[in-house]
Length: 115
Image 1 (cartoon, rainbow, N blue to C red):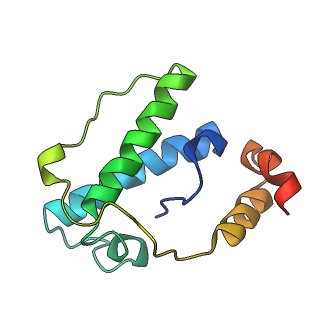
Image 2: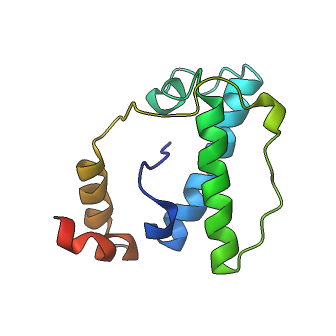
């Protein structure tokens, strides 16, 4: 499970769509008190920060629309409680960039000058 801390416009199609799917999974785990993956570090870092997770989702949706993708899975804003900011990272931004670069996908090409 991974929610990147990188701007969605810098993600390739695979990582953008994958993050969206995993964001919905985390949202469901937290809002419905599901057991599966409830102790995963990525899930734990979003507990108490559903507003921040909601805003991340909105940024992903904005990127979907910019790329001409359809989006039909909105999140209920009434459940978007807690902090609006996520400052806890599992990996630093720099490490996330390196992880993407090592995957050999189009994501890393936007970061060449940062490495």
